[in-house]
Length: 553
Image (cartoon, rainbow, N blue to C red; front, side, top):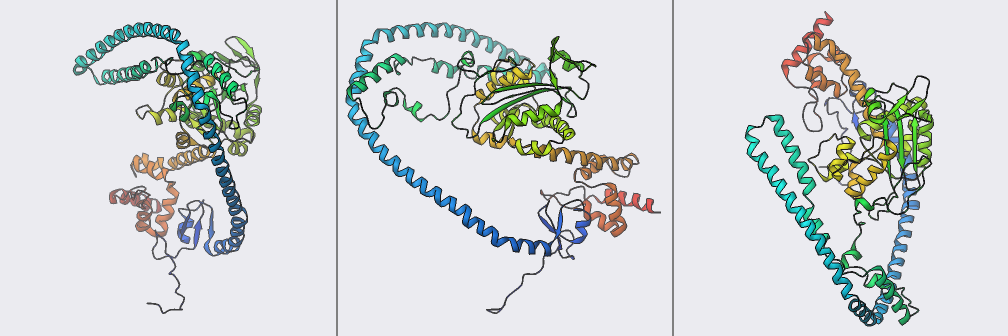
């Protein structure tokens, strides 16, 4: 035990892979201290720096960092705390005023409401009778639909033993679609109940408002009859906007479009803090290395649509589905109509100008698995990746949001399948300018929370890194193909090595330096799940060592 007053120094840590070696280098990419040998092998292409030099730099920066926290962050937090306390006090005083004003108006309001309902009793009864007639019609329709469902279910249940495996899969798909289609009938019947007897009409509320102002013309609290009796308790506490029926979605104000595309207004969502934009695109094919044909974005301030000059040929399937054709002379036609097309670089510049500096969620279909890769190809040619990386920080794939609500959905869904799944019908027009509105309608139907969007969110930089890693894996796998062909190593083990960034030359160098022991150390190194990154099978390692030994001889 050390005596009091004596400084005890901690022992210098050693490398995880080489216990006999002290750590001398810090890998910034892996946030890990390693020995010099590891820095030349596993971390050869990483951003590494000597621990002694790094500690000196950090020691110089600590006082400045503490000063910034003390002068900046703490000051702002203190100011915000004082503001919160002031607002709470003001709210408390206002609450007392509102309570007092409500008590004064309560008796007069109750009298006026009773008089209004007594005068309109006959009208309310007539409306209820009409609703009952409509419910009777709906009741007959439901009974008919229930009989059809029972017949379908009974047929599938009786025939399931005779179905083959593919017929079983088709049967399950039909039953799931039937469940999604008819799953909300009870809720619809409840919402169809008579709301006339519980809520005032607009005319009645206007009349009541006039009566209240005639009783007390000047009310200090600003109390409105609509806040007191015009809303139910559920409506007062509601934070999520009510669902909009499909026939009413296109009602109300819309914003103009210079391309003649019908646009829908973006409804403010009180439970989502940032703006929500929608993006849709059409590409020359379904491959990730295809090029843009059409790009459309819907924001809170407008609707933009661009046709893009493709750098690759348009596939026959895309031409048939979308009606977009690009001639050898550089002219673009949509369903036989000539349209103006712009270079990809100009379109991406205009897209970034539309997005501006405002941070917003960007919702699209398959943008994580396809759309972003296409934009990366175009941005790389014109040198826009840095700017794209700064602007596209909160992207969300609509398929991921839908799967967050229903885990049974497939990971890959076409836009038509997504529309059928969410809305029960196909509203896709295979035109990016119109499909961007369809994305908004589906988003409103799902009505995701801020938490869901945060869970499903990714950024442009993430896709770029994924693309780079995949390219490195393919490059590493190429080095393993001769060994696979000669039977020196199984294909599965070679693929695992490539996924972990290990190529043949790395292992050959390790075998020259340390023989079989060094090779075993690299191949059997544990990953985050405490499993070997490549393999710990002695037979496979001996087979690989024999191959390298043969090469040396």
